[in-house]
Length: 149
Image (cartoon, rainbow, N blue to C red; front, side, top):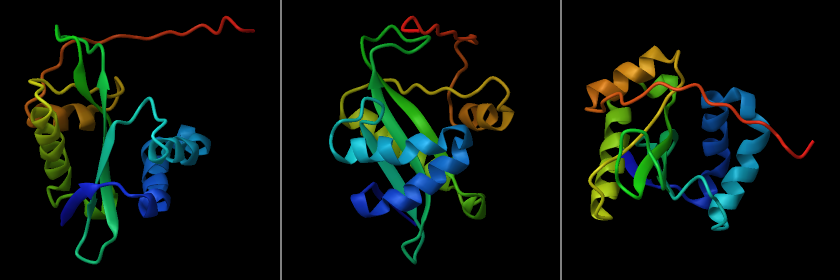
């Protein structure tokens, strides 16, 4: 297992994994990753990928710096925007290794917190976050109204 920053040649495998994680947004993934590699992403500061001994990607963790995170009083907080391990690679502690790499990235930048979220019905993700030391801070239902139409 090797964890490293995502590189442009990873875009197809990364796009496929994002489609597994967020199937309702499949049409947006490739554009978002191209924006990341062009330095234009507002959602991803850095992405680390995990690959097996043969070089195949088996997971990723996308990180950003947000100016707000529920439960934090810091003016900026590193945030886990996406965290995924392919089903065939689960059970090997790759998710743990990715999260530990994210924590190291955040502390190297001088931060003392790492925030994350999951959907309210994703109990597996909630349990994994808690196993890794995250504490639940709030539960919210979010709304957005389009004023342009």
